[in-house]
Image (tube, rainbow, N blue to C red; front, side, top):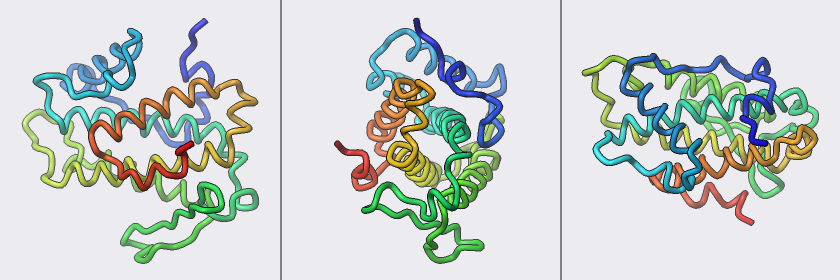
Length: 209
């Protein structure tokens, strides 16, 4: 019997408030179209391809916000097990360490415990996607010229959440019986990032098996 990600995970444990699309907007309709493609059983690799006649920036914006929501849901469920004691460094196994830099408080790449890194990461993404000058929600307001570059950075950093969860906390995902759902979400994210060239191959190395 098929069940959804929300049924597997406790939605009350979402790490950050969910960002929603306003009904009646083009982005809301694009989100419905994307979800309908996935729910219809269409191959995930085909489902992430830019639909004919649609704007690339709108398509990317819809998916970036959607993945932010989904990955929040996944990490929010296991975050009580991701502590400064269990994860003193934000990493993806012994070979990959992720350092935080935001050009504000952390002007140089800084080693941090995983939960602190995650908090800073989600705060940073929230600022981006709630900024009307970067993710405009009103018709007629253009995306910034560097929009895709901003999204590449968001996608890259969200991917690191997957890496950390898979390598350090997948035992909790298995105990919840949610591995199939996390795997599907990861595949969707992976195909989206690679199809639209939003993530460097080097970033993918920790989860290459």
